[in-house]
Length: 222
Image (cartoon, rainbow, N blue to C red):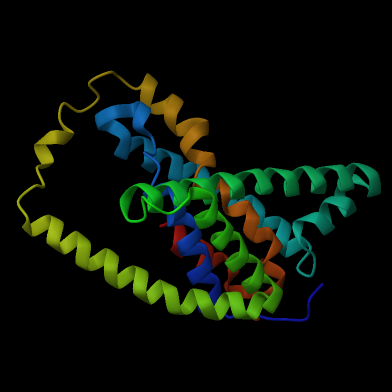
């Protein structure tokens, strides 16, 4: 494993931007319609439970990533298969995210640029940062989270004072009952985006103060 360390602030920045990620682009919990906000809150509760499971495993194996301790738990061969499935799952998720962001840029600001060219630039940038190491990724996240929070705060202020915010649009409450809310929250919203925090089981061993892992994770989720 790479002998590098990230600070709690850097881990927070990476987690926060990961959680926001494509959830800003994709209509999350849309199946619950006007009660989507409630489905997201319920999904958050499930996500917190999952995070405590990830944290418990990290405390049991503080020096191993997920692909390492699954072999300790399930044995060499079954653990290797589980680790491989984990890698394939996030390869699929990553390609989906790159496609989503590429289409967003293509449709909103760069309609004359081939989508393939946009996606290739994304991939090359990701590969370059990962080649430089986890510490560079952490420092990059520190910079971008400041920009992200500033733009997000400014944008929300403008939206609020624009007069387009009408909380009455949330009514009627529970128009279609609890069923669409619960079926959306569990498992859909629980696993996306909250459950995908499992990816940080690969990064928690790099935290320079492991005792802060729980606080950082919960602060990001809440």
